[in-house]
Image 1: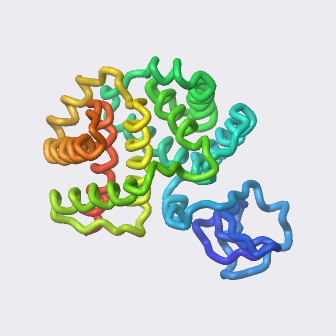
Image 2: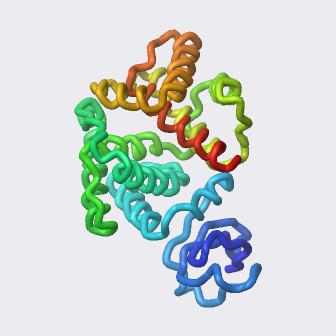
Length: 277
C-alpha cells in the first residue's frame, strides 16, 4: 500500500494495489516523508473507501478517538440495517458527535427533545442511536442527552443509500441559491470547495428530502428556538429567510425545528468564515 498524503499523524490518504484511493488509520503512518510504501499492513487499523475528497480536511479536524467511535457505530449499523450505506457516513457521524460534545459543553442547559416521531418511523435506527449514546459514554466518557439519539438515528436513516440522495434536477440549484442568499445576507464569500460548505450542502439535501417526503422534524423545541433567536438574531433571520425561500419553491411549510437545524449549520459556516477572516 502506498501512503501518499498525511492527514494527521495516524491518518493518511493511501492508494492500494489496485490503484484505488482510500483513507487509512494506523499508528504513526503519517510520520514518514510522503509518499512512501507501507509494507507492514498490520499497522493499519481501519480503512475507508470512496470518501468524498472535500471531506479530507474535516477528517483531520476530528479527534481520532471520536473517529474510532464513529467507525464502530458504522460497523454496527452495517450488520443491523443490512443495506448499503453512504460511504461518507463515517465522516458525517464523527463530525456530528464532535459537534454535539462541544455544543453540550457550551450550552449545557439547552437540550433538544427526543423525537417519538422518529422512533415510530425508524425503530432500528433509533436503537442504533441509543447504542451510540452508550458507546460514546463508554469510550469518550461523555454523557450526551437523549435528544442525540434522534439526531444520530437520522444520520443512519439518511445514509441508507449507495450514494447521497437525488431529489430531482433542482436540488443542486436550490442549494446554490440558498448559499448565495446567505453570502448576500452576511456579505461574505463561501468557499464551495471547503468542507464547511459541503457539510452545509449535505444537511440541505436531506432537509429538502424531508420536506418532499413530508417527514420533517416536528417536535416542540420552542424554548430552544427562542433562546437561539435571542442569542443569534441575525442567524435566525437568515435561516427564516432561507426557510421561506424553500417553502415557496416546494409549496410546503418548514417546521420551526428545521429552521433551528438551519440556524446551527449556517452559524457554523459563517462563524468559521468570520474567524478565518
